Length: 150
Image (cartoon, one colour):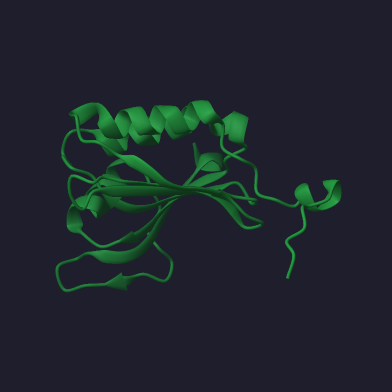
């Protein structure tokens, strides 16, 4: 089957692309501790614009995406030096691009550690409505930060 290109009206249905400046700032922040991160995916679909970085130096990666509803997702957070402030700096970068990208909320998907939960609480993320509470107090699930609440 031959692939056809999108027409103008169909192209308007695609998720908004993230500005190259945002992507460059995120990549620079990831590499601030001298860990190399290569972009392995930069894809725009009807659902979202997704960018995924991985490091050949270890199991380190970060995936972000922006959907058509203005939700900015942070996924697969495995950063080489987790206590070095990278996620806080990434959060600040995303907040700076809020108006440019029309971001309404930030979602950290699949919070699975007490450390990540503590980070979410510290930065005023809302706990998941349908999360699973573990014996150690961890509430697993997607944590949300809504700009309207600021």
